Length: 419
Image 1 (cartoon, rainbow, N blue to C red):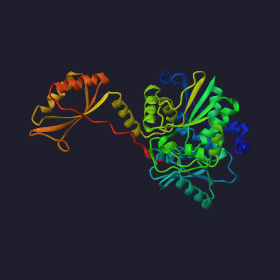
Image 2 (cartoon, one colour):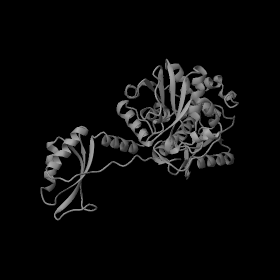
Image 3 (cartoon, helix red, strand yellow):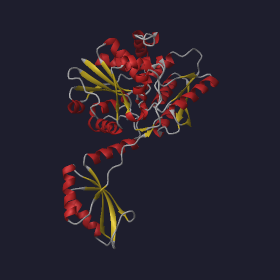
Image 4 (cartoon, helix red, strand yellow):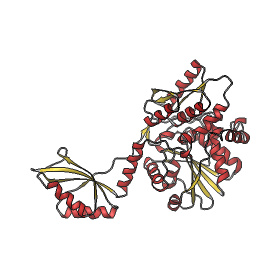
C-alpha cells in the first residue's frame, strides 16, 4: 500500500470512527433493488440512494467529519464549490454553530445557490470555475482566520465519504462490484478504501462524464492533468483536475475506470425517475449510465451496487429531459405543416388528429421561416400519442389527407459548463 493509503486518517479504524461520529446527522440511506436495470443489463443490480441523504448528496458525510476535527477556537469555515459540497458544509456548520462562507461559480445552478443560503451560509459568486473558487476560499481562510474545507482533496473528507462504502459492505450480501461516480475522487477513494478493507475481492469501478474526464489521462500519466472547457449535465462531477491525494489513491484502488456520454446520463436520469421514482442529478446517475450504455457489465454472480451520489437537479433540466425522452420513445411528436389561411383551415387538421385519438399539447401559427403558398399559413404542433406505432398511424392518415409534414427533432442534450 502507498503511504497515502496507510495514513492514520485513512486507516480502517479512522473510517469507522468517522462513520460512527456522524450518525446523529447523517441518514443511513437505503439500498434499493433495481429490477428494470437488472432486466436491461443482466445480473443483479441494486442502487445506494445517497440522493436521499440530508442536503441531497453524500457530501454531508465528509463535511461533518472535517468539522469534527477542527482546531479549538475556530469560529468559521470557508469553501469553494459548485453546489453539493457548499450545501453540505453550510448544513454541517449550522449544526455546529459555525459561521460559513462559500465561493461558488457565476454559472452555478440557481437552485443550489439558493439552498446554500437557506442553510445560513454567505455566498460569493466571483469566479468561472470551482478551481478558481477554491483558490478564493484559501485566500479568504488566511485573511479571516477561517478553516478552509476542500471539496474532495482532504483525508478527513475522504474518511467521511467512506461511510457510503461501510454501509454497502454491511447491507449488501454477496457484494461483487461497486460503481461510483468520480468528480475530484473523494467519494470513490473513501468507498474503495472501506469496501476493499472488508471485502478485498470486490471490484470498484469509477465513472466520469466523457465531456469532462481528467482522470483517465491523469491515471495514465501518473500525475494530475487538467481538462479543457466542457459542457455536461453531470455538473456535480465536472471537476477539471484530479486531487493530489485522490489520484494516487484511485490509481491503486480502482479496478477499472470508464466514461459515459451525455445521452446515456440523460437516459439514466429519466429511467430512475420513471421506473424507480428517484430524482437523481446527472452526476448521481453516471453509474447507471455506465450500465445502460454497456460501458460496465454487471457480474453474472453476486450483486452489482451503483451509488446514486446526489439528487440536486434543477426542475427545468429534469422536465426537459423527460420531454426529450417522451419524444425519443415516440410518445411525443413535434410537427410542422401548412393549412389554408381561412376560417376552418386549422379546424380540419385538428379534427383529423382528434379522430385518431391523439392529444394536442401545443399549436402555434408559423408565418415566417417556411415556404408558404398564397392563402396558406404554417402550423407547428406538439402532439401526445400512445407510442411509436400510434404516431405512425397518425402521420399516415394526415399525409393521405394531403398534409405535407415535417417532423422537428428534439434538441440534443446539453448541460452546464464544466465548473
